[in-house]
Length: 474
Image 1 (cartoon, helix red, strand yellow):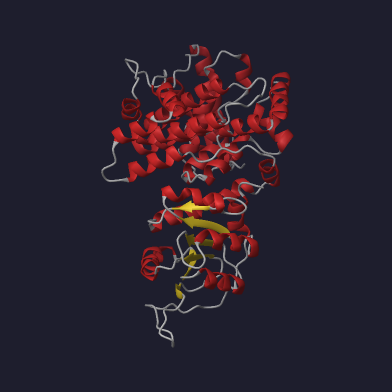
Image 2 (cartoon, rainbow, N blue to C red):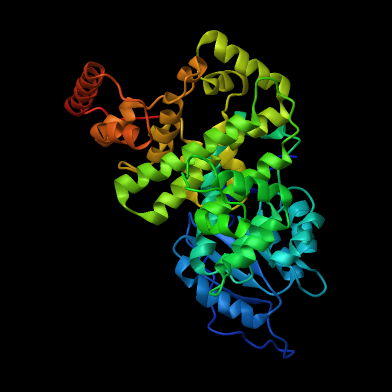
């Protein structure tokens, strides 16, 4: 069963009877028998827009949805209905790209509806609206686990969720990625602790002390949090032994990021892949996250963006854990050929699988709801030129941080693993900044002659790109 089949459906579904206009209603009309109608409202249909169907038996809630999601009408054709039966009837009449069902409904609850939807319309993506404590119901869903949506979800969050699902198709478009995902039998699940921490932080009166107590209940997560905060990347003057204090030093966003990576490591910690080191990956991930954050602060002075860079840098190599855990024999050969042929492991991954650990990580983490900019930085950290941004971005930060961390290592094998893409950096006009980034990240200083020669070379390269009018393409 392919983990991301549901996400694919969002972009592969048809549009049914495009061109037909459905007249909106301002308020629920009373039927001849005095009953409330099932269909509350749908926005006018416009070709090329994706169609989403909301199902909830609470008519007042549907009216709130109609008002809240009005701002999405230019991108999505939004329909609302109040029963599972009517939802299935509507789906038999036209094609919907997405169905969003509430868990608690009479006669046919959200799980039953989504299961029937999967059977009749497998191309339709499924979301289940439920609270954190109701997540266990997701296990009762057939096929690929539906995406979870909070009951209180504003228009911006909904739009981001749907857009993320659409964009994930970029990573899934390669048939090789789909084939590779189909071979993965051991897939980590989104940790409950992460969801609990997220929920607590979303509260106006969210408590760091409470988060510390939550983490302290899990010995494995506690160990990883303390390992992270006491690492050289944070350079604290004393050792931290209390989870609550660790959270205070890490900050909310970095704590969540560490929990995600720690959970994946714990769930896949018994992988027997010769030549693959969980500890080495953890240390490299921590260093890349810290370097990406430092580079971002130097360029933007934006603390929030720096935290996002830390998250992307920390999680950029999760795909390696997936490959080592699921395909250990093949991944051993990847390392062997990489060392023998003096080529980056990602190039051997492309030869063997037709895809790399980077796209794989983006697919997994996209299913967990991480922001799109972070997913792009992870997916393209080896090929940043594929990004849409033509100026400094998270993709730039993670790409540079990853390459610089390999530059700093003494192991000769690491020299071939990752290098800064000079064409990409020159195209952004960031040649001089790249030298500063190396200093910020603690790279050994080159000799004056080597430094001058490299600067001259890169300036000439940048000038050549401008004069030739060349466009950097993937």
